[in-house]
Length: 523
Image 1: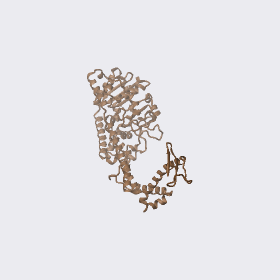
Image 2: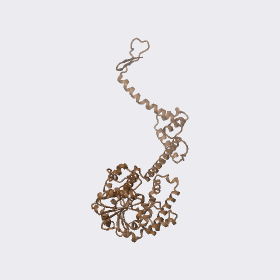
Image 3: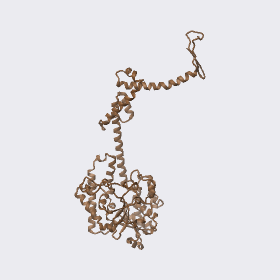
Image 4: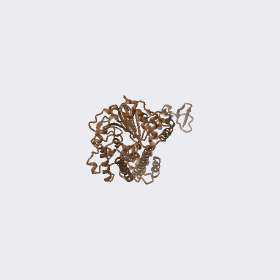
């Protein structure tokens, strides 16, 4: 056999008998055009055949007594795929119904799984069970990681950022050294307006200076008649000094701002006792709920978030709990708009004071912008324990809860309906029932106290949920909303606030202010 090779490849192949000096007539010549396609075809087919034979050999090692016997009928048979599929399906179904011990140390990665299956030559059933065990352990780890992340996320929401703490300290220092920071709020010439019903009165109960400034600046900026706005800020004793200093130095040109501390109120002994009793019952409900909370309650992703929210320190916040005493805080006012400190006003809200509540006490959003049958917040079943007969016999578990955060209150109707007394009555019933009627927080007893006294207002007056995970409010709804509410743990002044909506709040923070710059407040 002789090869003739040139620089351009194999030209021809001559096959001759041994010792022949000349080519015999039987000599065959194969041209390069025939050899090259043949080589290419073999190059494509041989790897496939090798993989196919290897797969059959591996499979036959457990299914057949003789490898050659299996190869003989399965190599050219098309039924092996359907049989393998049936066998794998059967093994997966058995693994689905079987129990897996997650505490047992096992395979942690796909590479380990392949290595073990190759070395020990397990059958399909063993493969299915080991795969299930591996996925189950991984799923448990992912779920635990998500729960820990949620816990850390909620813990982060409870802290006071260093920047806000810095702002309070700087303002308290300014109050001590700057006479202007101690000037009267409001100025004497505007004191008569504080109880004048012809003006638009807005109430804030807060201990957050920066948040209060955003609420007021956004409301004034969007108001058609800012000169008619009277803001009443109630705060605690520790925040009174910095709150007063801020609004004394940064006076609102058009509106009037009153800052009052709780220590400046002179309530009757009866009211003082009732407030202390209210705080104590709320503390007992929170403590009982915390004590009875088990680790298993955090096992389900849909439940543990609500447990964390129920245990939030805001449930015991004095400024939140005192909402039910607004008529006592402002005995000379008849109609107000209540604003939470985590809202932003985007449009003029002056028409709220002209709103006819039809004899009701509160005007609030009950239905969602997403449809008449959709709740904007939560339902009664998310707050109350309907296993208690006194709850199930008086309330519907599927009823939508009205939104707290931007509300119109007719204080005259409030007093006539004895809302505060009803609130206290149900607090005592909860105490007598073992503190199990509802979850901790201000909303459940308020829903009961205002039952039958709620006037539904248009959903675009108040769009909530911007502080909850993954706010899904469409952009056009956000733009059309008169008030947007950062309800939820992710407040816009925290680092965990959502960047996609934080800008709606940040644009009302005066980043050029010297205190804001010194404390490096995000803006």
